[in-house]
Length: 221
Image 1: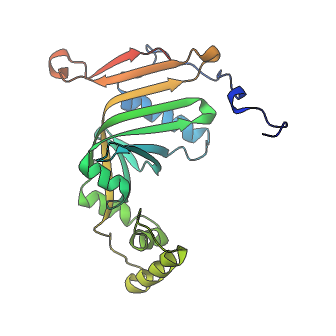
Image 2 (image 1 turned 120 degrees about the vertical axis):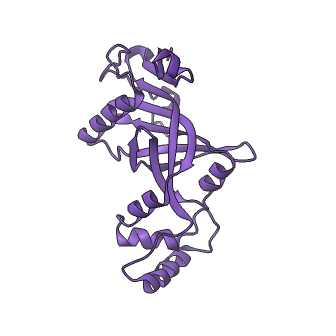
């Protein structure tokens, strides 16, 4: 290693931007997430909508990739992709997954776990037709996660489907949305001396009797 570079083990940062108190946080984690996402967008952090998606295959090996959140409400968090991709195949076999947002500039992380389901065809159709034309053609052109001989395959496919569909490509049957329905959230706010703030929200199965849908707890960092 060059003497001009600091060893990786010596790279560290003091987190001092903000704090997170359980009494001041929202009782509903989706509301807390909405607040933090809005603050990330307002702060103009790079790609505040990017999230890491973790799935597990039938061989029990986990895999991750970055996808983009396209919507959220009380039902869960939505993204769109190729159903035949590796993540699609893994979700078909094991519908449980995890998401993570990391807003470095705000020294914040949000982790979300839950079960995943496909969104309705109507939702997938509506979003697909809102996309730019080249993205719609790309959904047809890319056999996602499959081995191809070179980029020329993608270029040729895009040209072929562009000529076939012109300005009105339909949504491919292998492409659509997923919704993760959270049952566990964790909000992490960096703090000085590695004494970070870490709050966990756990969905309560007995919420009907207690009136409390989410159990909010502080975890040691």
